[in-house]
Image 1 (spheres, helix red, strand yellow):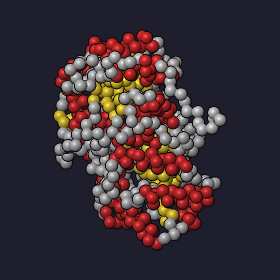
Image 2: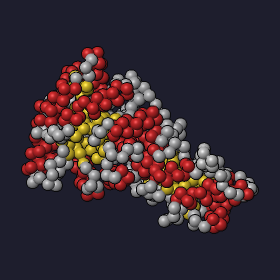
Image 3: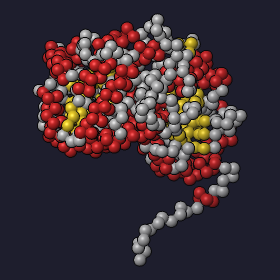
Image 4: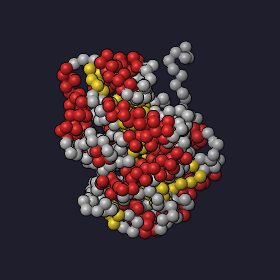
Amino acid sequence: MRFGVGLWCLQNTATVPRHHVTAYRELREDAQLAERLGFDSAWLSEHHFFYDGYCPALLPAAATMLAVTQRLRVATGMLLLPLQDPVRVGAGARALADRSGGRFDLGVGLGYRDVEFDGKGVPRRQRAARLAAGLEALESTVSDVPLWIGSATPTGVARAGSRGHGVLLSGANPLPLVRELAAAHRHGWDAAGRPGGRRPPIAALRNVWVTDDAAEREAVLDWVRASYVLYAGLGWSVAAQGETSAMDFRRDVGRALADAVGTTIIGPAPAVVDGLREVAEAGVDDVVFRLVIEGAPRTALHDVMRRLSEEVMPQLAGLDAA
Amino acid sequence: MRLGLALTAGDEGPGAALAEAHGLFGVLVDGPAAGAEAVAAAGAAAATEAVRIAVRLRLGHEHPVTLAEEIAVLDNAANGRIVVVADVGRLDAAEAAEDVTLLQRCWAARPVRHEGIRWRVPAGIDGHDAPEVVEVTPKPAQVAVPVWLAGAAAAAASERLGLPVLADRPEDCDRDRLVQPGLVDLTGALEADRGAVGAWRDAGATHLFVRLPGGIDIAESLVAVSRFLAPEVGMPSFPRVIAESATPAAWPGRGAGA
């Protein structure tokens, strides 16, 4: 099992205000800490036209992290490919790979907010076709940069597997859905004749926290809740993306928030280790700890990164996905 | 006149750090392909804390809203040190003016609504409940990002926009502008370079990027730039005795002479 951490969104929010210059300085410091603590990767997330300045341009953000680290991989989770010219994205990815010794991973997704498509003059109905065409362009221009696809439907992840790309699964996905999607990804790769010869990885964001303290546990679960309120505000809805019925932050916010909080693996280190074994058994190769969440102060973030690094990750180092 | 360094593509971080160590005002990220500009400039920014970072941004193809977002992120990552050299490529003056104006509107602290010959923002393509305006975020760290123009139609676009043009030749300098940037190739031969840089100063340039010849040791070349060229164009009649006298003795450390 490999260990990532994320998602850095670079916001200045109504409830946790800060200057954006501070946000980008903290991003560099956090990347350096993640590297020192032995995490394999750090992941960024993209949105547009939101009041909090949610990062709209992931490649320069990745560049600032890669410039101050030597070993850490930096990944986009996800760059919304239909909104950009893929040739230009490829040139940016090429520059990042060349300047970092090949430490950049490019994760791409569809995007779902109407205003983001309209703001860029891209018809929303073209998004799937644009993603497919964009991927094809990237496969040829940056064949040495690992590609990851964000998807929450069996069809979508199977397609990613059939092309030999990794997938990043949402943290709000309940574990049974993670298992189903991981199986679909493997099947897609098998059915396509195992392109690339080596099974592409399955990454899953997971809400995780190590704590022995009841009050901290309560606070962390509230941070997880608050972090999904943001997505309720953004209008995120898996139901709107495909056939999955769960996690509809538009139809029933209260239930969706409770379900998302319910995915959290939280407790003393042994309980977290057990929870992560279940994640590996569901077929996950790369767990991406969802630690950068609304309300969690940086001292708490750094503290839990240290505890994961010292008490949890060594226990799971030799564990492979089922 | 102040001197800056045009960086070599792929070497932006170390090059920028050397330019800063030699007291130059800024660096020019000039080499990378379209799409790699902000990535390369972020490397220069992460390696420095003071130099201004001018980045040649290629207009004409990608949506200006996307370009504006990249620069806004970059400016925050660089603590507000970015200057955009908008290379208008094959755009004519009217097209270039539209793209640059749209970039600037995206950076301004107002919602954007734009209808021009090339772009419509918001596009209004998904019909009924499409928004009337969008707020492009985050805003740059600077109140306004400085924009200089480059490319074939830069001079004509400058007349519409009132922005400086990054000049390729001293005779293109406009001494009525408070900021008149330029870009010159140095040879590595001190007397020739003195003549070249002096001609730009005499023509009214204010911020001149020097591009060093290929294959040369940058650290060594910058000693000549900071010791001779920068002081000589930094004031009228620089007393050369200062640069030509011996470098002050290095501190031997305590106990070395015992």
